[in-house]
Image (cartoon, rainbow, N blue to C red; front, side, top):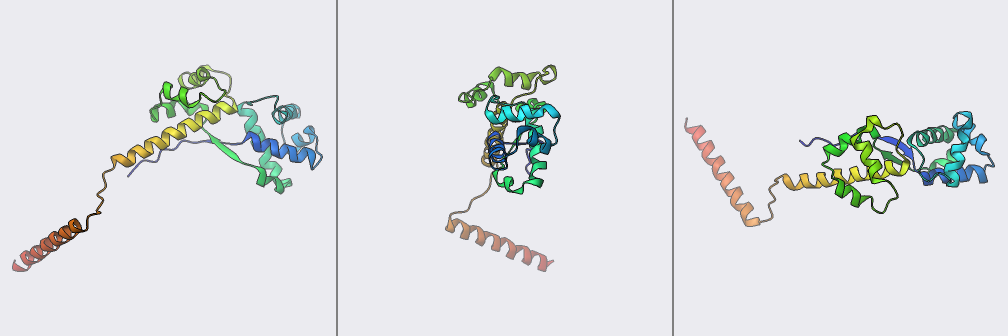
Length: 199
């Protein structure tokens, strides 16, 4: 039996769907950023973070900001159920598990560098979280989390596909071979029954 390759993940709202929700609340429901923040249940000054992410002043918010936003959105759904259809989530690997996942799925620096070449994130920054997570005080940014999680998912799928090819399964497409095997099986059963009845 194959062992399932899983790791606990963090559920975050996508930045795009967050912008859609805030756009709806600001333009349709006529709420201000402090009003949205109150409905989120966050600290008093957190509305600046909401505004900065919404306006695009922060391209890639930190993990804690996105977690607070996700938690706030989930409480907001109770008051405004119509926003639920605008929400999409992404599941990211926690930074403390990056090193474990890197080793478990046999990741390589060259392949990862090639994987993220079109994404505006720092390769060295990602490698710092992989190699020395405990010595880094700053949290990874949203784009970095999503890119690294996507790479791990890619490696996971690749390994899963390789395992399929290593499992040897007999495929019987030859009808004459099937008939021969059926004939041999019936012959064995016949002689097995004959030997049992003769004892």
